[in-house]
Length: 465
Image 1 (cartoon, rainbow, N blue to C red):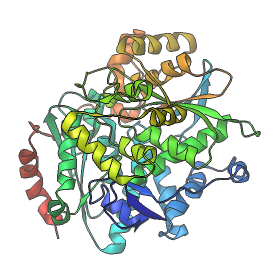
Image 2: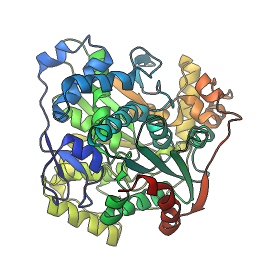
Image 3: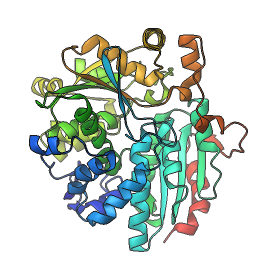
Image 4: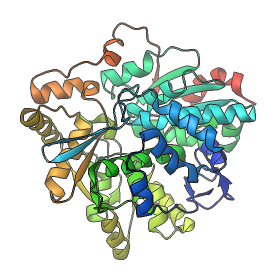
């Protein structure tokens, strides 16, 4: 399997090179040249497989430059850290299925991809005798999952930028209480988009990227998306009957990565009836799907902070396919976005978009009401991001088709919103309780690229080539 850039400026590269490149050297995002097709017979043969074996069957065709035994062992170790034997179990509540993606070390769906990516990095670095400086931006969950994915890995130093005061208290503690020498947290006085823009600027400086051996853990790294494809197959196998019935998925998203993984699963042949893209007030993606309006506005702080994003990184991957894999049009579109703050689409393109997705925006009032109502009716607690997806599913998806709602975080990570909605604090799992009182370390600075570089350089020199 070879990988190409959405902007057409690189020759096709193998999987291991794609993992290490992260963001393509032409500024685009990496995608496979084609998607393997999964037959109905294959799907049925996977129905009783444990999660790690299912993951191996789905990931292996994309990673054919890694020996099967080595890949299988990496995957096994990645999911041995999860506290539920099914890794991403599915439960049925109030007419919908909840796909619980929060049984990893940081209680968020990012663990599914980042435990795997940490092991991938370690394997490739050891094979090549290289070292890596990871730099990433987070709106809350990616940072902590990435830190915990690489904190014990050889040859890696990690720098994570997050918006100061705009993550939940638990999210902040999960990052800043990891004080290992190779872990550096940077709190930026600004938004997630400010953090993400600076990370992209560093990767687009090709001399800097090469000199400091930069690696990406954000969902710009294809391996992140690939690992997330697995749980769509896993959920379908748990809730569908043996006639191969389609299943609908409701995905709370801000950066488009999680729902793009569902889009990939559908392209591979998974019978998906609908992919519902659920947003909060930061609804650029809903405006795109429903109105063809992909225009930038200000970020609105909400009770679901991991979705408080305007610039959706993974949208470029979808746009490449929407434009018929015309990399020139992709480059032009993002140049227009930079200059004019918007991208426009033709009627035929929007017809295709609405065949691929449906979408709804759920505001904070409705989000909190959904948490409260769902808890009173079922006794099941939703975190505010999951509540956005559940509310959208109940409003938009027909009940005659199984509806799977992705539960992206444990409610304890957003206890303030849960208590406001239900009148009761979320039960505190041991993984959260142990954070209180731990020493922490974090550097606070302005949204200034030069300040970030001044902090990064002396701490990364030991790993530079």
